[in-house]
Amino acid sequence: MAASASNEAPTGAPRPEGTTCGGDASVAATGAADRTSPPAPDGHEEPRASSRPGDLAREALRAAREERARARAREQVEAAKQPRRDPGPRVPRTTRGDRAADRRAREIREALADAFRMPDTTPPASADADAALPAGTPSHAPATEHPDTLTSPEPTPAADQEPAPTSPSPSPSAPRHPRRAHAAAKQVAVAPSSMGAPARDGDHRRTFPPFPPRPSGDGEPFAETWWGRAWVTALEDGALDPARLARGRGYAEQGHVDAITVTPGLVLAYVQGSRPRPYRVQVRLRTFDDEDWDRFLDAAADRPGHIAALLDKEMPQSLADCGVPLLPGPGDLAPRCSCPDSGHPCKHAAALCYQTARLLDADPFVLLLLRGRGEREVIDALSRLSAARAARAAQGREPEPLPGIRATDAVSRRGPGLPPLPAPLPPPAHPEQPPVHPASPGGPDPFALDQLATDAAARAHALLTTGRDPVGPLSLWHDAVRLAAARPGSGLTAGSRALYASLARAAGRTPGDLARAVAAWRQGGPGGLAVLEEPWDPPAGRFDRARPLLLAADLPAFRPWRNRLTHPRGHVQLRLGRDHLWYAYESEPGQDDWWPRGTPDPDPVGALTGLDTLGDA
Image (cartoon, rainbow, N blue to C red; front, side):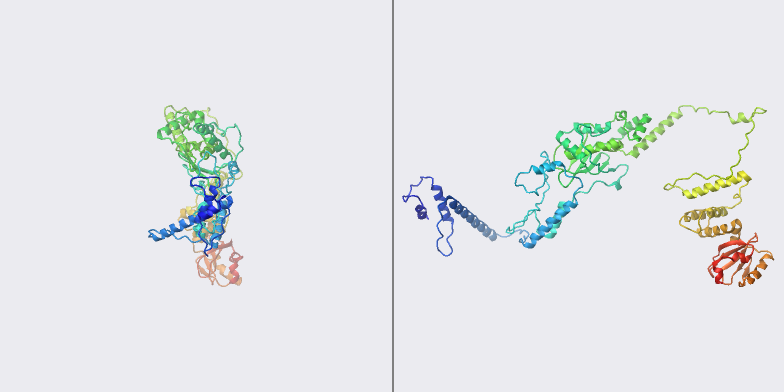
């Protein structure tokens, strides 16, 4: 090898040791390449390398690679000789099916990421960040937020990079198995759900829908009311970085804040940043203790205008300056965000604070809820306090004398000094209709209430014009039957079932008995009800002449029993009333379940006219 190196020298004379010249580097590289190159398998020497610098460099690089391969082989042999204590999981080799599964996993991740993406639009800052990426950065790299924020600790898998088929071990960021790929896709794509849960709202929890985007106004205040601007002032005076406030205000104006949930001492929402996954943001505020609330309620109850202003969604400035720090000051707002930014506040928390100012503009009771009490609780406390103060004030003064004279003085007068009584007003021609009662949950039935009022007006008109009440002699049962019969409709329907049940319960009967009695009342009034319920023995004459009349009309011989004549088949019956009228009844054959039918008539054959079952006789 030395001889070949010496033969490649420009001159045949050997150089002394320790001397160098411009061609020594090439000679040394060539010698190193000859020493590290293994002999050919067939025993013949390979062609000698060229003396050009490029060829010498390639030979040196090839020799270094071969030396590294031999060193790696020696390490594998030594590792195989050592006992295996805790073998790791077997890693399958990369195959064409694995690469196809990886591609399907990437497609699933991309589809799920688009499906669970929040509806908010990407802020303009992300486009600037993408434009500012250095050359060579892959397009799938996670977009970073503003330079003042830290990099998110959440790992972002390089789903778009397919592993090389010659790699002995799979990349940890790309799962090989389809089931693992699907799980990784779900872990990457699922975003936290919205905090908006109106079904869980109560007096101490209120959820507000997200505000729509609003046009940004340079120099204009973000809040409209003085208490909303005071909230913004507390935020801006306690902030450490005005630039973050400006970006947070831009987020709020662009509508990046999701539904806002307000509870005592806490404002909670998700804020969409430049990444697909929104950040969970909360802002805390100190709540009042009982002594602070007593002072605030006393100050609000001192002036009735304060209560009226609160009911009109206004906050009097004198009430806010009552000695209790109702509005926050600089440093009172304690924001907290899931983003990696350590600013106070970060732009996401600033966006939530700006949107909270808009909530305060619309409803100042949100501020009272943040201090510990809900709207209904505050209004009830103010009502009790005002009533107690009014009662104490009324006890301290004497009652004012009523206008007029005492009744004893007016009655004790005698002689012509008393004026004559005025003439009574003429009675109306007919009773008027009562006013309409609106329906309310848990209230009385408007239709039943209207029926009772109409009946009372008719009875009062009859008593005024005739001097007697036609309903007065009726019993409770008869009056219940009369009220049920006055209701439109027939039988037990969905509308009359509740009325029948209540009237039957009051009279101690069943709804079926009431329905049968209503049919008898509609057939003949009180006389028809008596025919239904009171059998009696009629005198000879009219009752005895009824059977020949029925036989003359080609009807079979009816069976007599007291005031009743029953068809032989048991499905038609005639009853004679005390008013000498015949009432027809029908029943199922052999059931003895008689119901009034038709119209009363002095002739028994005329009473049976119109019955459908009579033709079956």
